[in-house]
Structures are given as structure tokens and as C-alpha cells.
Image (cartoon, rainbow, N blue to C red; front, side, top):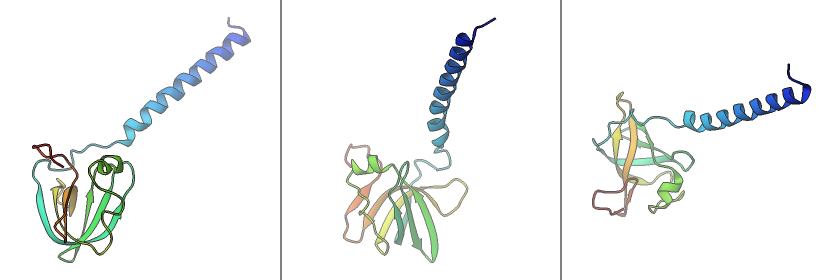
Length: 134
């Protein structure tokens, strides 16, 4: 029915289509939903001590100790945060901070970090404010 050249062309075309479909599907599967956070219900956490600041894609992570317990907070990407004054050196283990966060819906200690206020009073925000400042 098909000659050897046509069969090779069909196989090559099929492989290219499969590779294209996989390359598009991987980024979609890698990104997760933000439904696990209670958006808009920011909670304060005062007197926390930074234990670890992870500056990595696709999201940053902040780990703190407060009241003798470990908390974990997800943040925006390094690219986004860099545009809003953050850097990989913004926080260091031992830093004393106050923060606000959107809590996890399942009640675990952690959530999505919204702001960090350092001991010197300087404030870092992850999300733009309604008045456009950040």
C-alpha cells in the first residue's frame, strides 16, 4: 500500500507530533493549582525566625520557626520577586520577621506568603497592593 519512503515519512511525522504534544503537556502538568490556599484571608504570624529561604523556580519557599513549631510558606517565582525588590539574600537563617500569609485550607502550618516585615522595619511584599505600590 505505502512504499518504504512513505512509511518512513509517516513514522517521522508521527514522532514529531508526539514529541510536540509531550513538550506542551509537561509545563501544564508541572504547574499546580492555588486552590489549596484561602486567598484573601491573610493571617499574621509575628515573632518568627527564618530557618530556610529557598530561592528556586518555579516558586520560592520560606521556612520559619514560631512558637516552637515549623511553618512552611510558598511564594512567587524568583523572577516575579526580583521585580519587586526581593533577592536570594533578602532573608537568611536566624532573621527575626513578622509575616502575613494566606493559610492552607487543610489547616497545616503554612500557606502562601504575602508580606515579610524584617526586624529593621523594612517590608517586602509578594503581591501588588490595590493602590499599586509594592
